[in-house]
Image 1 (tube, rainbow, N blue to C red):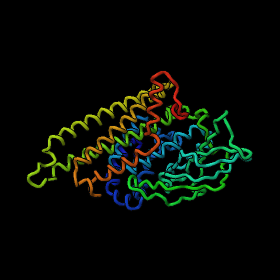
Image 2: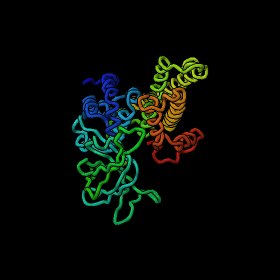
Image 3: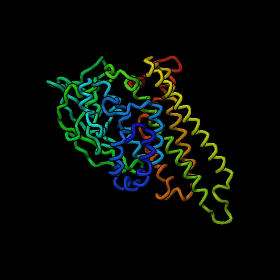
Image 4: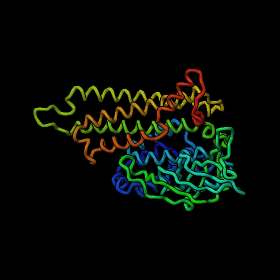
Length: 385
């Protein structure tokens, strides 16, 4: 095992590619890949080194997500999805965090959908609910779910019109996984529904995003949600660059029937490939520069302001859109070859379009970034978290 995340990613990539079809067929990441993922600790890049994490600077984590997505989107997705519970552990006490992250081999899953309730009781909360799209739930030891807090039969309010919401960390043994993930894109993520029925969760195993961070390190100071958006964008870029590479490889072997010119000989294809490479490279550079800005501030102990966060949101959603355009363009260039599951373009197209349904790449974040640029406050409560 190496503590260099990017090197570990490159070492893992051949196995990921070798097991792609098994991951696809099983609707979950292939076992040998999971074993190596655990050993590499790539799913713990946002965990302090003290707890067996890699405590990886965000710009470096982006390179990992991009490389993983270029090899297999489902592996990248589950790895990235682990980062939210890791980041949210900053709101736990040190003792609770040490308990939940005690074993370096443990993986995590989560849902930010507020589809559960946590009834306040002596010592903690009685948690019930059902959450959809819980990626990697079959592999996880702990899962974190957003719940609405109730007390005396009513929602507990932080202020008028604002109910209290908390993350509840629940052991897998207290969860029921419901086989619902029959999907086209990101098929290997195992994003099933998970149900919890009247499980006692201690106060220590719950977290409020309104709490102060208990991790005095850059990994405990970077904004969480915009950092996640950047990780999402890095995956989109990875899929798009891989699609471009596929077209260039396809051009070396695909011969069109006479009298049609070959794929590589069409000026429109030549122009499209050059334009998409330029757009992707520019989007990647802008994304990394924006993320480096907030990481450098966090590392120096300086506050990250709304303008910094706005820049990351803008760069992330820009990279998402550029990646979508690039994948669609490469899929079109591939012609009939793109229809076959044996062609990586087919997988890239459905994986990326499945990704684009995620909340983190929806227009509301860009709208809030624009509000900040105009000197107004964002309206999305999690915008600056």
